[in-house]
Image (cartoon, rainbow, N blue to C red; front, top):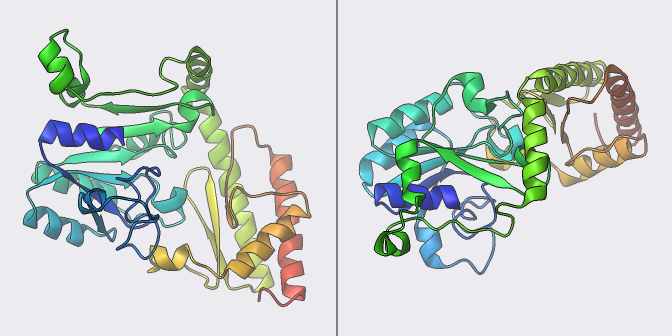
Length: 316
């Protein structure tokens, strides 16, 4: 919410472009486009004015360029760096670079949501990993070691809209207000300092990425050996399993996020009874403290789960 407010204040424009199925929080201005059907808010109780201030597009550069060319009241474009749902719906190669080029061309701010990718994809997040320079970015989760906390970072000239000068007129009417229950919370600040010191070296990310790559490869081998129509994919330390096809190429968000719920639930439950729990039905994230033994255990559970699903006629 704060990043969008800053973008509007800095540019003097009102609208924000966002992508279908990307998640940027549950406040009114972020809910449109979160869940299909994407032409309606994901919840009742959202004012029409909030809906009208958000433009929801499919994640393709042609749609973005047409929209930017046709509407001069756009303040920013916000993108979940991993693609929707921490990469369940991955972005196409070169997409973020294209967004950066077009936002500069049309004098619109690029907002990179790094709540997931920040510090996980690299010590400097996705932007460091791929060499991209957004105007604003949002951070949370790892930022404060898992405790409540978040941040917006950006270019100095943009962030000046939040500065208090001591002038009563300016501070009341000409700046962006920033408040929060956990602002300056010493407990969150202390855990944040500790977490950032750990992730700054990059060692944790390297371990997590290596474990995730081994898990992705091993799980795909299990699926191929079992001749199950499914595929495994993911970036950095994430992994996703899609049942129903051996490739996700060409699939949109509505397809990738709406696999048959029965098979998703069966997969997760089959893993749970074998000692492995996923953070969602068919996806997960590795950490820097997972070990080779953990991956061996997980692959053994995956193998048993797939065999059980085949025996029960759920997968095949």
